[in-house]
Image 1: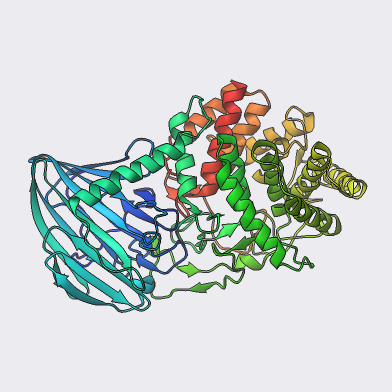
Image 2: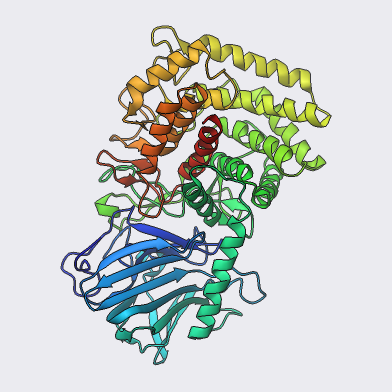
Length: 613
C-alpha cells in the first residue's frame, strides 16, 4: 500500500474508504478481537467478547460503522507485519521526513481485576526523523445503532458512554472532542512515542491512564505470552512460519472463559461481492472447533483441546438426544443454543454487499457430519493428549448410540445448504467415522461399549456409500446418494481412512474432481447450478477444499502436484499470512476473516505433505 492515505469517514471525506477484506491484521486477548487495516485504522472491534455488538464496524459500513484511525499525517508508504512469533501487530509508515510505526495489541492476563478490562493498546513511535500523526476515534456502539455521549475527563482522557457499554480512551497527547468523535494531531521526533489505550469500564472496572512505562510493560508481557505459547509447537517442517501463523490465529479465535473456538471473528463479510451469502460466524461450530482441536493436537497444544472437551461435555448434558440429536451444530461462545438470525438494514454491508446479518438460522439445521468430526477429535485427544474420563466416555457412547439410530436420514449437509435436506455422502462418511473411532477407542482402552451394534451400523454405512455413493457414469464418488453431482467434501474420504488413497475408485474420483472443480490448484465446493443450494449467485473457491486437495494428492503419491498446489495456496494468503473463507475470481479474499477452517486445514496439509516428502 503506497501514496496518500485514503479519505476517512467522519473527517470530511467525500467518498469513505473501505479497505478490502485481506488488507487487515488480527489482534486479540482470547475474549475478543480487532481487525486493523493496513493503513493503521481499526475497522472491526466487538467489546467485550466476540459476539458482542460492534464498536468499530467500518468494514461493514465506512460511514455508519465507526473506526479508530491512527496514522502518519502525510503521504507515506505503509508496511504491516507481526512482531515475530506473536499476535502483536506493527504498522510502519515510511515518509520523506522519517519512519514511524504503530504497535497494536491486547494484553492477555488472568490477574484479578484485570480480566474484565479488555484493554486495547495502540503505541505510536517515531523511529527516524520527525513525523506528524493524526488520530480519530469514532465509536459507533450497537452495530452503529446506539447513541453515545462523550465526556472529557482531562486533556488526554475521554469517556465514551452508551448503554450498556462504556469505554475510556486515555492518551499522553491532548484529545479534542468533535461531536460523537475524538481527534488529535501531534508530532513526534525520533525516539518519542505516544500511547492510546481503550478500556472497557463500568462495574468494578474504573478508568485508568496508561502511561508509557505501563504500556511498555504490557507490550513485553504480551510478546512473552505469545512466544511462550507458540514455543510449545512440535512442528519442525518446511513451512514453519505459515504453520505457526495459522496456529497463532486459531489461538486468537479461542474464548478462554469457556474453551469455545469461534469459526471466525466477523459477521457478514461477503462470500461474493454484491451477493447475499453473508453470514455471522462468531459462534462455535461443533465441526469447525473439532477440526481445530485436531490441528492443535497435531502441534502439541493439549490445553486447548482439554478446554473444548469441557465445553462439549456441558452441551451434551444440556440436550435431550431426540430426533434433532444430542448436539446442536453450533452454539454461542457461552454455550447458548438460541442464535436467532436477523438483518441490520441500516448497515450497507462490505462494498454494498447486503444484507448484514447477526445470529445464524443454520443453528437449527441437522448436520449429521458433526458427530464424526467430534468423536474423531475425542479419539485423537485420548491418543495424543490425555486419556478421556469415564464421564467423557459415557458422552461418546451416547453420541455413538444416537448415530446408530439416525445415520440413515437426509440432512442439510456440511455446507449448510438452504435448499432442503438431502442424502449427502459426506454426512454418511462422517457417521461412519463417528462409529469407527468409537470402536477404536473402546478397543484401545478396553472400555465398555455396545461394539456389535456400533460395528453393524458402521458396516451398513460403508456398504451404502460404496453402492449408492459411487456413480458409474461419472466414475467418481458424488455429492448425494444415487446422484451424479461432484462435491469437494468427498476429498475427506482418504483422510478419514474410509478408502485407501490409492484405491482405483478413489484415484478416478480425484481425477474427476480435478477436471470439474479445480482451477489452477484452487478448489470449488460444488457447482450451484448443478446442485442448487437455495441461494442466489456463485461463490469463489473454498480454501479448506484447496488444502484438502493437497492432502489427497500427497496421500495418493502425487507429490510434485501436491507440493505445487500447496505452494500456490500459500501465495493467496494476505500480507500477514491470513486467509478468509474463499478466494474470488481475481484472487481476492472473500468471506469472514480470518477463517478457522482454512487455517486448520493448512496445518493438516503441511503435516501430511512434510511426512510424504
